[in-house]
Image (cartoon, one colour):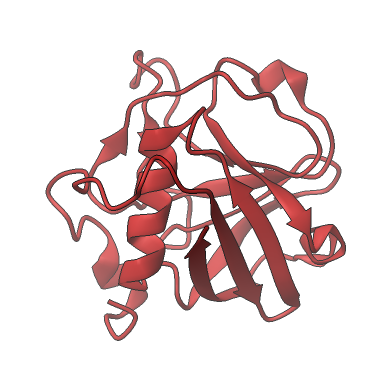
Length: 171
């Protein structure tokens, strides 16, 4: 999929992916950016649907070459939108999983507002990383991982910076 133009990845799929993860394994993703690497642990136990989705899209090359389209200093960086404007996704949503908290470095999925998304389902591909604890987002947005290393890279990201590749490993 990495060879498909970014905008053509929008609505590329008609439904959520089948299960590609092993619930008995632990997963880590390396988000390679033009500013350096961000290593995140993925919490299968707390957010199996989101981890499965992120692993699937990463393995497909969906994120390769996409940008960070939103940066709110002291709050979040956001990327994973094939359209690059906050409106795109893979063509499906993911049911909310709300047990993890928004600590500094939380990896979570964006979503459409409540008025058009009352079930609070997550965007299929747009993710964000918090730059500080943001407890007011708890129980509203699905956290599925956290930054283990590269928080300096997270804090250096600017609008337009590129997600070169996301690779996932399992133990």
